[in-house]
Length: 505
Image 1 (cartoon, one colour):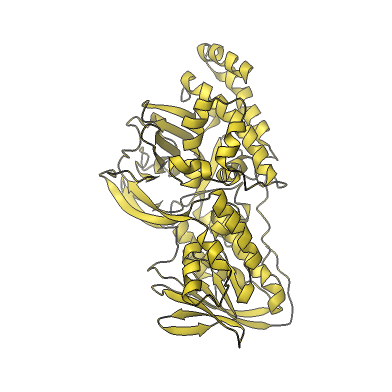
Image 2: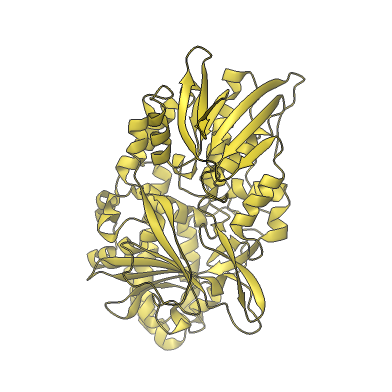
C-alpha cells in the first residue's frame, strides 16, 4: 500500500450514507489521504453496521463458529485488492483461513446431480467423481473456455439469452437445465429471468477465480484444490468490517440514524443531509446505500443535488432476497451428503424454482470428527415452506444485474461529483463483492483529489503471488491440466468410458 505525502493540509467534512462494506471502506480510505484532515459522519439507518454482511455465532459439538448469514466468503483471484487491505491491517493471517470448494447442481425433478465438480484434485480419482458425472463435467469445461473469452471482451451489454445460444460444444438441454440455473448464484434473478442478466456480470467473478484479473498473475495457492475460497470462521466478514472501523479515526459511526433527504445549497455550493429534521451541510456527500435508496433521498431533497441521477438510479433494479440458515440439515439438499459441496444449486425446471445452498461443513474445521451440518440458502421465488430447522431467516437487498441495470450503472459514472455528491458501492462497478465495494470507494476518494486540492487516496497494490502460489494461468490451461490427469488415475471401467468423451471434446 502506497500514498504520497505533502506539507499542505486541507480540511473537509464528509457525510456518508450507508454503513455496509462500501461505507466502511470509503470512511477508511478518506483517512488515508496524506494532506487532508477529513472529518466523516457515517449514517446507518439500521441498528447494526455491515449491510449485506451479517455473522452469527453457532455452537456445534461444543465448538463455537461464526456463520455468515450475508456475504459469506471470497476468492483470492477475483479479490486481490480486498486481500491486500486485509493483509495490510493484519486481518488476513489472523482471522482468515482457506478451504477447498466444489460445485454441485442438484435437479429435484430427476433426483440426481446434473453437474458435479469436486473440491480437491484427488476427488477426481478416489471415487467421489462418478462415471455418470463426466459427460456434464466435460460440457462444463467447454463452457468455461468460452466464458473466459467473454470476460476478456469487457462487453457488459450482451445478455445471457443473447450469449448462451452461441456457446459451442454444449447441448441445448445442458444450457437450459444446467448452465442457466448454475448462474443463479451469481445473479439472484428468478430462473425465468436469468437470461436478462448481463452475461459478463454473470460469469466474470467465476472465471477470474481461475484466471485472475487480466494482466495480473494468479494468486490463489496451488494446494491441490480445484477452487480455493477464503473465510473467517472466528469473526466472520461482519467482524472483519468491525475491525476496519476500529482503525478508522476521525469518523463518527452512527447507527439507528436514518437520513431523510439529500439537499444542496446553491449559495454555499454545498450538499447536505437531513437527519432527525436537522439539515447538516457537508463539503462532500457520498451515497454508499443501494441505488433505489439513493434515488429516494435525492428526490426527497427536491432534486437540487444531482438532479439527473434519480432516473438512472431507479433504473438499477434491486430486490429483497430472503435468506435462511439451517441446521442440522437443509431440506433443499438431498439426504446423502456425498453430493454436498461448498456451493450447491438446487433446481426444479418443471416448477421454475431455483435455490443456492452453501454448506458450512465444507468451510469450517471439523468439530471433533464431524463437519458442521449447517447451510445457508436463498431461493427465487422463495420456497413456500422454509426448512423447519432454521437458525435465522432474514432478507438482503441485492442487485438484479440485467443489461438495463448495468447500462444505467455505467451511465451514472458521468454524474460522479456533480454538486459534490458521489456514489459508491459494490453495485457501482464490476461484480457486487467486497472487491467492487473497495474499488468503488477508492475511485470516489481519488475523484475528490482535483476538486478539493487534496492528493489522491491510498493506492492498494493487489496481492501478488507469493512463493508456492500458482503461476499465471488461463482457463484452457486449468481445464487441460484437470483433463490430462483424470485418465491416468481412474479405474479401467471409468477410463474406458472417458476416452470417447475426451475424444469428442
